[in-house]
Image (cartoon, rainbow, N blue to C red; front, top):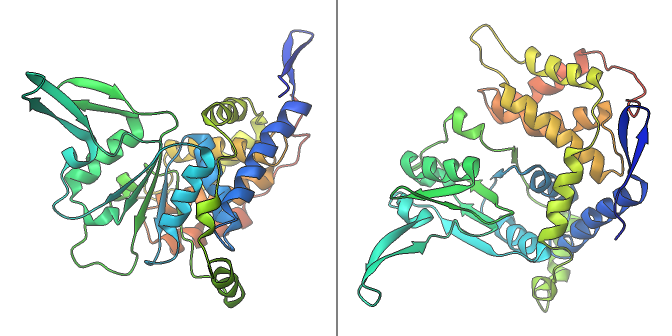
Amino acid sequence: MLSRERVSAGSEIKWNWDMEEKSVKRIADELKANVEKVIVGKEEIVSLLILSLITGGHVLLEDMPGTGKTKLAKTFARSLGVEFGRIQATPDLLPSDILGLNYFSQKEGEFVFRKGPVFTSVLLVDELNRATPRTQSSLLECMEERTVTIDGETRALPEPFFVIATENPIETAGTYPLPEAQCDRFFMVLSMGYPSRKEEVEILSRFFSSDPFDKIEAVCGVEDIARMKREAEEVYVHPVLLDYMASISEATRGERGQGVSPRGTLALMRGAKAWALMSGRSFVIPDDVKKLAPHILSHRLGCDREEGRRKLLSILSSLPVPTEDWGRR
């Protein structure tokens, strides 16, 4: 594995990205190909999961039961070589069922902390909207802070810590819809959707005699994930593109103040940088922003997801796309 070469150019410090960038791109490509040995026809979803992992964000999947959400999360975790955990949300699920609790051990003669399922690297939370608002908030605070505080003692969560939560978009009985402010904590809201007929035939063939998941092995590790995150932070964004992103967010804000918050604009910038890296570039281009804006911003507009997506696409088509030498600093 080749390391970066630091070179000076006048008063500027620049990085020689060529060999390092190919290596990072190859890690992402190998991870995507490994997951697709099990998950059929969801190339874009897998790419966006990798993107979210690199940015340190979390993903909410709105989809029907049986569309492969659990299999996707388990395959993703195994491909990363990290621990996988699962929580089935119900109305009687308590914060302590997720976070853990202190209990008195007669054997030890003292209070001992029992870790909850949140202490894992890839966590699947099925039907998050079935948990009460109090339990939802306890999980979302962990996602934001990446720590757990019990009885005044704070414990760090593993690195990486990546949450994939799911919701059933149709069933509403006995559910507690996430407030818009809570949805804003998720980096992306995605939908896998049903497979096409051709894809479903491929699923039947692939799972005909055995489960391909059983043969999945790790193709990267924690160090690779950390390096991808570091490299993504150093991807260059031209000031004109920063203004373009701010213009997109500004255009979403109505008279009532509903629209994309600065947190959303920051998420868009981080996503564009990671996407550029996954595409083999050390700088962001307008297509990166246009590609990701509907995925990252549509659930932050205080309206229905599809309506938000249509609004974003309309804004993107109306705003002039800037032209510059995007790699020039």
